[in-house]
Image 1 (tube, protein in one colour):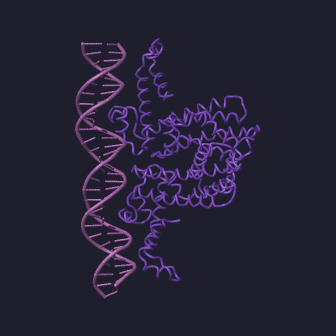
Image 2 (cartoon, rainbow over the protein chains, first blue to last red):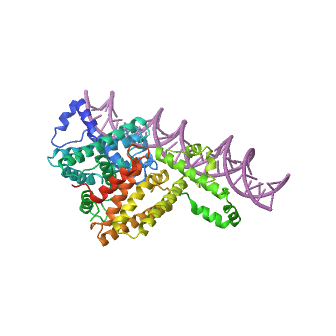
Image 3 (cartoon, rainbow over the protein chains, first blue to last red):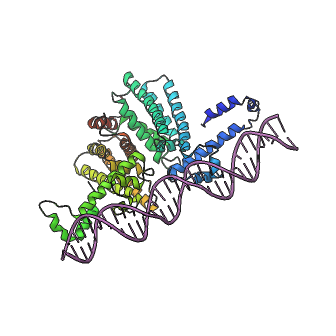
Length: 220
Length: 220
DNA sequence: CTATATTGTTACCCATGAGTAACTTAAACT
DNA sequence: AGTTTAAGTTACTCATGGGTAACAATATAG
């Protein structure tokens, strides 16, 4: 779930803490505690960004949610935009992870696509993911904006691959995979903007309806 | 195309200018000129908002695009947020106009829906509409936010009606019209974020693909 | 049990940008 | 013509909020 790449680096570098990690009661190491706090900050920030939007949420707001003061945040993040970047890392890892498991199964393209949609609807209820979807592309730094776009294109491309595969194996209708992939993403990402777990509409019904429209369309 | 309700009010009030309107060469009255300028400002603002985002676009930027200085803008708009509101008015009028013509035809629900999609893809290439779609819901004022939501819900409701009609007349598959309406909107609105007229993908191909996926789905 | 790195705080700086006051120029109606 | 209204300008105020410097507390290691 968390930003564990940094953590692995840290553990690899400071080999003396391996001893600690091996203790029966897993006393959280500093790096772990730090990681947990960073995740909490991301969660708080993402929730606030979703509610008020990125620009209307001040770092003071986020700090308050986390019950610390603003400068403390700078111990965990580089600057405000860095929060979005870290959310993107989390999102990228989860979505690509889903794609990994989906493409690993030996099934036709259509089944893979169905499994992806099921997993994606699940993922898209997470605040950090929703934050990323909503604010992707709003990077101030041109470099960061390009990187973000690239990573998004990569994911889209993997979905396109699945659709293409389905076209070849006959499980998906002949179509323009690029457009279909984008439209599908738009519809799924749109869900992130309005769907709430607590709402009246239950999860299974949502997935059922989404799958039905994607597979069958609306025509009778 | 423009914000002509204000204009009608104005003309109604100042009846002496009716004479002018009836001239062979339609010399633009003050109210008309003002309206044209307001439209141009909205266009410039919408284009800038789409490129850099609302908060990263200053009123100075917009004024510069329009080749005036910032205070001049305040002659046409109440404040920054008012630009979004005025864009919403334009968008609401266009979309409801489309819905009017679509529901007026005596056809089954499916055909009406198809005509709506065709028209909407057309509409969604306009900067002012795209601006509204992207920034809808970002109202600072709670009052304005609620109004915006309400007007959006109304449009969604009309689409739902069309789908429901199709369900009853048998032209559209039995389904949950609410979810279908929302998903459809998400997909169509998503188009506004990436589609450009000048691009390689031509308009007809886009509409064809969108209609195909909505009607047939992806399954073979 | 001290020395050191890690977290955290209070108190500031300062760029940005929305909005306004006061004044100037241009147009329009009688 | 000359007075009024519209349209635009220059030169400001002022709140907000990102980011930092310098200092304080707490935990970890030797």
